[in-house]
Amino acid sequence: MRKTVNTNIASLPFILDENAYEELRTYLDDIESRLLGDKVSQMANIERRIANMFDGRLSEEQQVVDLNMVADAKTMIGSPETFGEVCSSVATPTEEVVAAGAKEPEIVEEEVVVSHYDYPTLLYRSRTEYIIAGVCGGLATYTNLPVKRLRILFVVLTAVGLLTLFAYLLLWYFVPIEPQKLSESSDDNSVNSKI
Image (cartoon, rainbow, N blue to C red; front, side):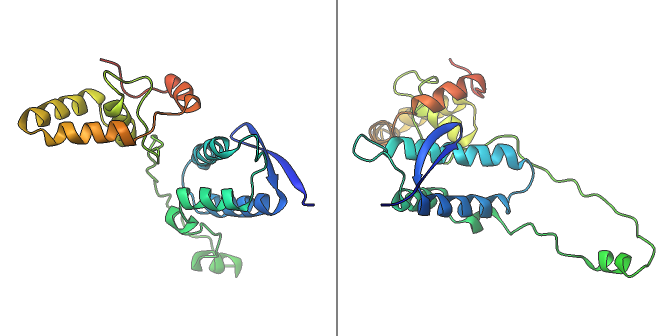
């Protein structure tokens, strides 16, 4: 018999195996220690992706998140090293001089540029931005490009050669439709407008 932990991931309740919970908590803490800028929104985006993955894998037969599901989520998100170096509070030479009793030097603040767009890491066909199948709308959301430009590009390239039409049909077949939960939250923050 194993212990389980009830927890919320992106405001969705989950039951995790105790080992899976510790593994996921350590993984998320490691990622959070590497993020720069607005950590709250970045971590919310990562947790939302993990919650969607877990929600899609749980069934009547398996209602507890185990180590295998956490390992799959870690594979999809990526290793913590991909998020950058650990932001630590290591004493700099100027801090050591100040600690030794010297006069404090002037501090120059550096401006950090942070993107306000949370790039999705999974490609979905859009439920809201569609004319035929939502492929251009999904690509527009994924790449943060205007949906009109992508549609015009697809039409022009299809007129030039049928390879683009074949690529569109392949994307239509292989790219999954956006999950209902993601499309509801993106209705409020829609970047692209419908044609």
